[in-house]
Image 1 (cartoon, protein in one colour):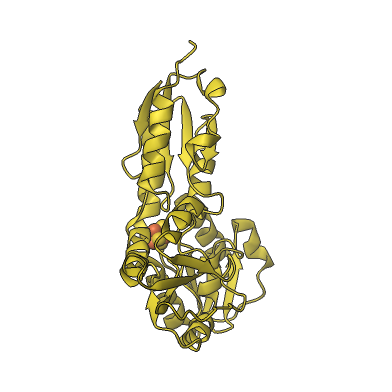
Image 2: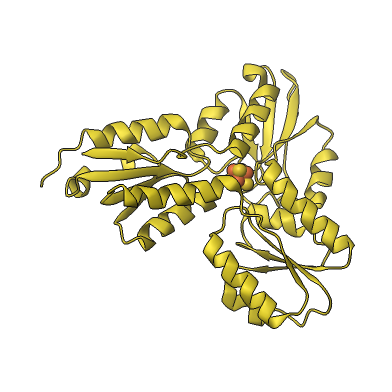
Length: 293
Ligand code: SF4
């Protein structure tokens, strides 16, 4: 079958940077790197990094206490995940006494900065995102008890009465059209609302490239990425909304050649934390599928 690959498929600059930070610290396995929860949301990449002694400790949300066994053989360092962490978590990690490097994506850092600044100025802060996602959990920590999370425009009516100014930000990987709806509803209910466009450029690019795949004739869409990856899940949702059969897979092993052979053209995209070696392998397997029609 013919394969069209989205230009932006794969690592975004924030993920690239977090991996680079961890690798720099690991020095090819000479030092041990502990990441507080997954450095990025891709288990195949985390497995590949473990061969350089980059190890995930703690839990998915970076909330539990972490047990770092002292290593006599080599120096260790703690690296913060691309999704960022709350100020409290930062304090906790630093008091563990190990050297500390920050792998937080600068785009997430900008959102945290806006929240902190506005909370300090007395604003209420509304975050559009998934309350269970580590990025949102981390961001809430900057809101100084003045934060609220909404995951849908309908949630606006359930917010308590908020007196005074409100700053609205979004988790970096949300849909622009949904964010606009949230902003609209918030402005209808409250008088003084300041809206910040904090959906990152990488997310917007991946979403518009997906629409392009459909325009270029993709009959079926294959979205590659971790099941926990918010931006990958969003891409799969967007592809389904375009009326195309969509398969969210983690690796080429998840492909069903029998089903896919019913199509002539596959559009392939991948989340911001999907490594190149997986994307290439998936494209190769797809190209070898003989179309029935
Ligand atoms: S998806 Fe956006 S916010 Fe998340 S790591 Fe990539 S560039 Fe940063």
